[in-house]
Image (cartoon, rainbow, N blue to C red; front, side):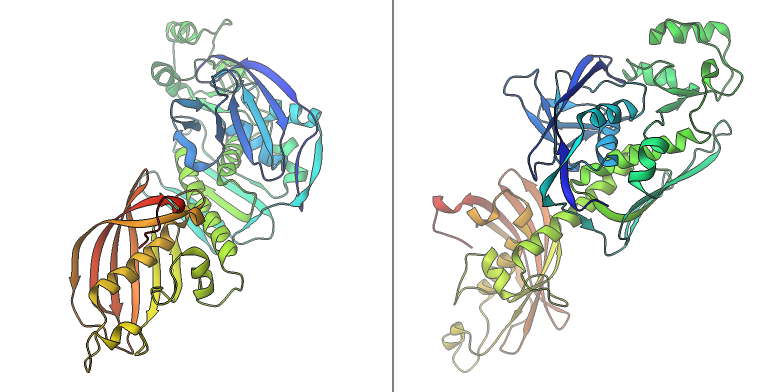
Length: 471
């Protein structure tokens, strides 16, 4: 796998209609600087709004992956992104003067051909690989979908599909070397659907740009000439439509014996591009689809963001510690005698954090609370939980170093057992809601696995320069 980032040397363009919207669009690939990532820019809209190709920006997965921010959208990005990933491009501007990229022939090959014409240039920065060092799993019981990422010092993908449909049957495929296999073995694989789905998709307002030249239609039911003619008219297909003799509408020839599953692998590559970083892992997928792919990409992206955060603040890796006290002081503004968390031992970005506070007789508050019978004030236990929760918000907003977390409300605070010198607080905080610049958290504190305090917090996020008050 490549070590340095790369982009293209010159702009290239292609035009056509979108698969689902049927709208015309010219798409232009342009070089981008180091660490830019992959971004779509709608040049037909005022302000030239851009959408970063990351899982956070997915707004729809109806038979394709749609990105959006507010009212700005780009439909069916997976085939374009598969080409970008397959060619190991890190930084790229993708300009569109419409809402959906040209469908081409329903595969990634048209985009690959354009990007090859643009040629590649190495950039003076290392690739930001996400190295999977633990098994990550996704399971959907209802649809029997499983996707797994396993540790591996390269990028491989294996896909199996089984639609319980005799017209397709079970198929599997695997990609083991992007450089050697992607262009010839997977990029040409076209999108497909079943004949029984076509009318339903059309009635749902999809496949407005679809025809038998940019999609493989698998015949899974009998249809008479009248039904086929109605379908032809509804889809706007100019040529006659026939059942065919090889199980494919109009007897279109497959490019590969297992072209459908190869296209599923192509979709998977494109959707996993939304992790936002190249990955070193073995990906195994059974019956994947866009919804599952995107959910898995979100899961992996959380892991990627967490690893970046830890690397940013924790300079020395320590066994069993996510952030030591030095890292915590890089994150939180609090200092002696008001820094009340010693280390972070568990972190799930935007979800959960666990912090530790060792309570010593040397704590300054014990001098007056209470002489001869030292007890940690309940308000300081709440403060310790809140500071731990502040670490959880590292990824919730841009530029966390420039922000302060301020109490707005404390609910259901309960103190169940005194905390005394020698105790060690084990503080577990969960993010329960996040809206704009307001967050809700729920915290519980334990000593020796016994619950000693709990509370719910509402906090606001403000710029540091706006206030000198903090948690």
